Image (cartoon, rainbow, N blue to C red; front, side, top):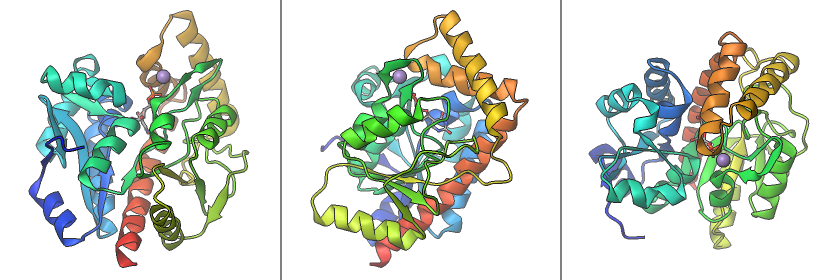
Amino acid sequence: MNYPLTINNEVQAALTSGIPVVALESTLITHGLPYPTNVETALAMEAAVRESAAVPATIAILEGAITVGITADNIEALAQLPADSVRKCSRRDLAIAIALGENGATTVAGTMIVANMAGIKVFATGGIGGVHRGQPHDISADLTELGQTPVTVVSSGAKSILDLPLTLEVLETNGVPVLGFRTDRLPAFYSARATLPIDQRIESAAEAAAIIRAAEALGAQNGILVAVPAPVDLAIGNDAAEAAIAQATREAEASGIGGKDITPFMLNRVSELTKGASMKANIALLINNSRIAGEIARELKRR
Ligand code: PSU
Ligand code: MN
């Protein structure tokens, strides 16, 4: 794709001179976390990437311009906008947001597409989208994108509000390797529950980099998922998480919430029902994943 991107100077210089870069998404800013926690978290994720000696590139669409490496002022402005005034952009949405000159927040799918266009190979987020519980045909565009765009996504697995066994099945169908970062069970986002066996355990960023390089050598067009457990001291207990998720799922069904609104509703409602515990865990894992993504990006440059 040759579409013109607006790339900030620091990110452009890093890409040109071989300094590691990590992409970060913007949907968690506009639709995933409330203000001002969203700003603080986005900035803390950027700082965590820098701790790993990599350059962060938070991606969003600003008045129709696909922007790689938005500024802190941009983050603040996006974070304050009402969620319904910012288009949540997965693959199907990008062209619309551009043509209409809109502000758009990129999801995992949208961010992967832009990162790939910019030549960024590693991307950190919290939890990817997946197959919704009780709605096996509501499959996040994130899973499709992972099957067709060669970017490594570092996340705490898929969100535990989802049907995780079905999500793993779709990842398999789409040809996406799932690598457990020091775990052999699929992390369940902010829940401590991790029961599903995954493809391969890795012990280090260097091992992740070796697998990414092998995929590149194969000419693989799929993405790779590196699944990192949430920091143990903050992950929420299974029973508390499941009770809140079950209640929020019932409420979403009862009030007819669907499509791209389900995930933001669920994240917010589970946070209310757990008195903020799920959000605390979400923030901690976002920052931790950003640091590990920085390490992987650095290892990729080392080889
Ligand atoms: N991780 C988080 N919070 C979020 C998301 C990920 O910790 O809000 C976002 C990502 O942008 C992901 C989206 O792509 O949730 C999934 O939305 P959906 O289920 O509608 O595909
Ligand atoms: Mn969906």
